[in-house]
Image (cartoon, rainbow, N blue to C red; front, side, top):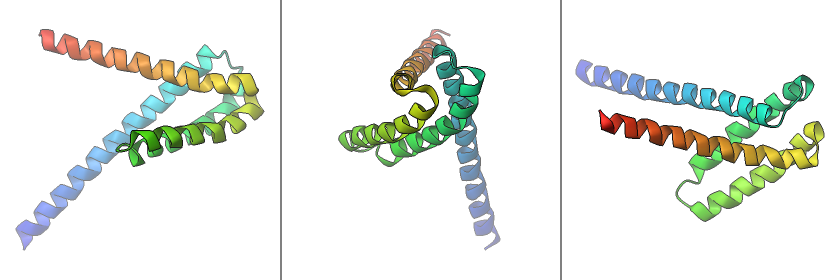
Length: 128
């Protein structure tokens, strides 16, 4: 019985640690993505202060949408489009309609650059 409890405790701890790492990594990505978008769009300090909380909510909803719909690409695309439409209205109040659409373009640029960096690191790792 004691061994069983020990194994269960260790399993729960390792699962919690994995989720905790994922949370920290997601938080870092979210912060870097937000900074990237703000710089690329030349947001003023006042705009950035209003933009950040909404972007953080959007990012959390976006990640949840990706995780919840990862097995059905078509549904995923639809859900992401719905999410973007909903948040576009919130961004529009801060940075205007045209620039609110630009948020998503810059998000895609960030993701593309992040993937390229990962591929470069993976290639470097194989060369050693």
